[in-house]
Image (tube, rainbow over all chains, first blue to last red; front, side, top):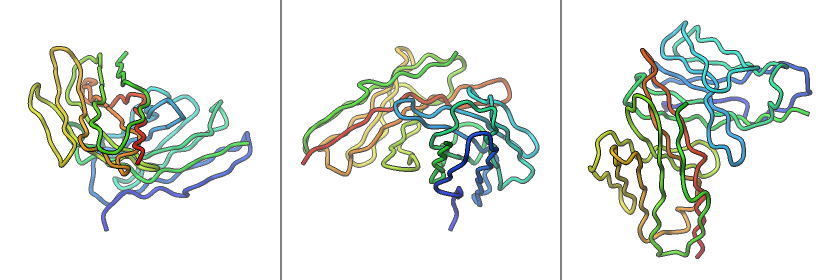
Length: 113
Length: 113
């Protein structure tokens, strides 16, 4: 089955620890995206990548880092510099960078205490 | 800065009612407007609109874009409890060689039996 997978579904971390969220797609999509969703805030773009080995900061990139070494994978690291890391994180991909809909993974809920 | 505003932020209706969800935007280099439905996890794609005045329809859902007045509406007729969800509007804008989506905060629709 083609799709986008994110793991784990729920993640708990102590404050001060870095944590990496996984996102994999087997749809042969060029572009991949990371969003953060907080209650009442909609989705906010963290980072996006339109081709392998290239990525751009979104609207709220501070405290996050990404890599895009393979077309299928776009992991997101939440660093200890991110002041409010507890949130629902959604990964998305699209076939080409423009004029195509984005497909979303099931999300990872990160709780940092 | 690109801006997408959805209204109302929440809505409670009874089964069988018709609802209209609004999305207005201010973006530079508009490319498309997308509607998504989010029930608990991943948003699912509903419509992509690129041209003014052309209605897109899928069952009881329909949507139209007005590029002159910078807004879109999503109509749901004969609502059912299964329509209860958050409805997200997103606008794609070009950023030079790239493009990205800016999401509104979402409209929470509750359909009571």
